[in-house]
Amino acid sequence: MRSLLPQLDRRTFHLIASREWPGAQRVLPRLTRSANHGLLWFGIAAGAAALGGRPMRRAALRGVASLAVASATVNTLGKRSVRRQRPLLDAVPVIRQLHRQPVTSSFPSGHAASAVAFATGVAFENKWWGLALAPVAASVAFSRVYTGVHYPGDVLAGAALGAGAAFAVRGFAPTRAQLAPPARPRAEAPALPGGRGLVVVANQGSGQRTGTGPDRAEEVHGVLPQAEVTVCSGPDGEPLDKALEDAAERAKALGGALGVLGGDGTVNAAAEVALRHGLPLAVLPGGTLNHFAYDLGIETYAAAARAVETGEAVAVDVARFRAGPHPEARHFLNTFSIGAYPELVRIRERWAGKIGAWPAGVLAAWEVLRTAEPLTLTINGERRAVWLLFAGNSQYRGLGFAPVRRHDLADGVLDVRVVHGGRLARTRLLTAALLGTPRSSPVLGEARLSRLRISGLPEGTTLAFDGEVAPAPAELTLDKQNEALTVYRLLPE
Image (cartoon, rainbow, N blue to C red):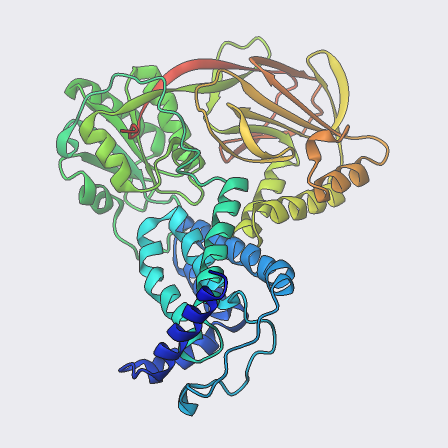
């Protein structure tokens, strides 16, 4: 059996080498050279990251990570474990042969491993993009036999290794489909076919818009043609707060729902109005980051529209903060912070799409801790010197000082994280970050609470919530309203 497989491998190689493949002579040698050192896949990833949205950047990053794991495995384990000679080129036409012949072991094919790893990694994020890349990956793999540098068995082994690398990366870094927020608790919301009964406030100024794109009303009517749309904050739009109040009154009269198209700050304002009027909220992601919409599982207008039309909805928690005993509260759907956290997020988001979330988090922490000065304040009765205090509406995943996203939007907790000041605090926290163990650092404090009291804030301190910045009062109380807001989202089948 052992001798039979190599013989079959060689016969298949000679069959491919001796056969005429129409059109392949012009394409496959060039294609195989373009994939040297992964340049083809890095180019595709760079183009996707530059021209695509956030989902495409995420798919490109996963593809590159899978390729890196596959390449490292091939070069450190595969080729060193099996010393196989390259095929003889007697049967391969000279015009097909590469000008520079590889000198490493033939088994397994690194090109095939990289191609399959990249395409599989992308497919885990979006199956249609993965399917589009599959013919390219298959052509690169086949080109290694066609040009005479690998046996078919080498290519099959490389392809299997590449697929395994993509699965390994998915095991360490689950996809959004794997970590979709649980569809609970389900909530009652009216089904609005075509958007009839939905009144949407669209913020013309949200996101990275140049003013030359389609009107926000056109974007909404493209997926929900019967929805009523008010455009605000543009040259001809009315103020956001008035537009939301008017839209809520209209939605209540129709027995429908309030909709909002914009970024996290706009969604925050809409959530406060929806809570006050007892209306379900439909969120269309139209901002730059769209943290709440993405954590909810709504990444496109079409996904929001399908949920609205079918009446699928869940109840989510809403966090709030108030000044001392003052009864009036402000709400946040995502995060609240005091200190250097807003700057940390800005730096991390700027670099995450280019170098990945973990390296970007380390870079952001280094920059913030290098330039920031700690604040002295009282947290739940204890006086502390801190660089930053973060409170998330529900528990976040990610590095201890740079949380990324949430799995459950109705878990009833505030995710509180504090980076303490003190002797050698900068060095100790950065060391923990570089070692990938920030949670074990004594500089970082974490707690899951239902209520948080902050006092003794220095004059001039600012706070940030859902992308908005405001002056901080001397005393603050944070708490939760569990399952207070009904939001449309697709439920798993």
